[in-house]
Image 1 (cartoon, helix red, strand yellow):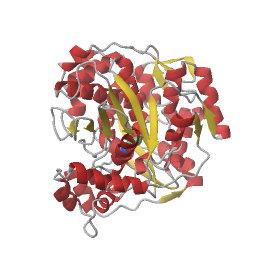
Image 2 (image 1 turned 30 degrees about the vertical axis):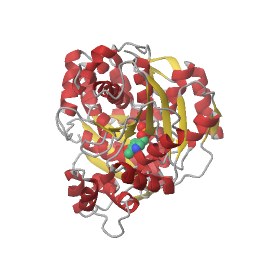
Image 3 (image 1 turned 135 degrees about the vertical axis):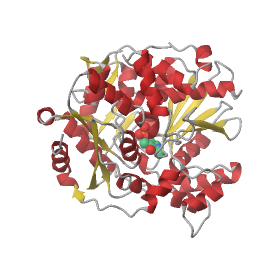
Image 4 (image 1 turned 45 degrees about the vertical axis):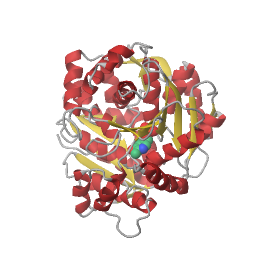
Length: 484
Ligand SMILES: *Cc1c(COP(=O)(O)O)cnc(C)c1O
């Protein structure tokens, strides 16, 4: 598989090049040059374990050999997850709502699914390119990507992570995971701003070719762990395919019957992976894109206008507090197959703050939930089913309830453990004074993730607050300032 830029079809990259550059050299995003449409045989898929399926899909979507892919997959999923057999779980609350739990990894959010595998890909790419350089992984995070990339790369000998996060909006657990994890190859930058400020700074460092040359001369390679990196997307396709097979195996659907997918969305990476799964041959019917009050994506799929000219809102689902959803660019390319158009639209987004694109017939539906609705949903869903949702998943459940018109089963991606947001969740369940993880474990009858309670018990580290105006300079200085 070769990759091309969403903004220039002639700009080709190998898997290793795409992994190590993150964004494409022209500022676009790497996408598959020849997507293997309908190449999965559903009958065959039914017989595969999670790991076997990950290898199969990896071979379709990358240029790695079977041995290489198998070794990466083994290292990623054989420990660190609650079960060494299968990193995900599906909880069917009734015949129609099937919750795809993606939060059983080391940091209790879905990002572990990709960020345990991405470091294996990157280690391999470094070996293959025979570069004796340190890989510096910069990550902009609204909470979950940061910790997942810090944990994912913690054992990587060649890599160092720099994580940029906003001081407001992230939960105490998320903060503790980044500040208290105790890995020495992790640096943190806390910005007095929001996630989009962090993401913009990271993107502009990557797009600055002069700066990248300076970094290389200095003995490092710069790349990102954000979902702009194609190595993040590929592992995410696997769980959608696996879940479909699992619904067939459990009798929830018959082989070949369609189901809908609902995803709480922010940077649009997770739901995009479901769309790629459909292209591989999985009969997904609708893609329900759920937003919180930062409803740029929800509005886009309703109106065909993507408009970031609005106020940023800090919500109870911080990992979806985003106004510029990077991966939408990949969908625009996938739907239009027109790199010039994508380039035009992205430039218009930068200069004018909006663009228009006709999404009718794309299969995407959307809706949103505000904080009150999120809280109400956590409470009512618990009353009806006994299942405790995290605030992000609750947004998706609310939108599914609003949009459901028939009996087609829905696979709802659950992107975080409720234990990452104990206070919000416990309040929604009616608790007034005890917001501890232990209390949540009592009520939910779910197992408390041990790593979370461990990092929460330590005092917070002092991390200097960087003014938004100085962010780019501080980030660049940190990237250059290394010892190898
Ligand atoms: C990152 C994240 C999301 C958003 O996922 P995208 O791929 O960016 O759309 C939703 N929920 C949680 C808990 C997350 O960590």
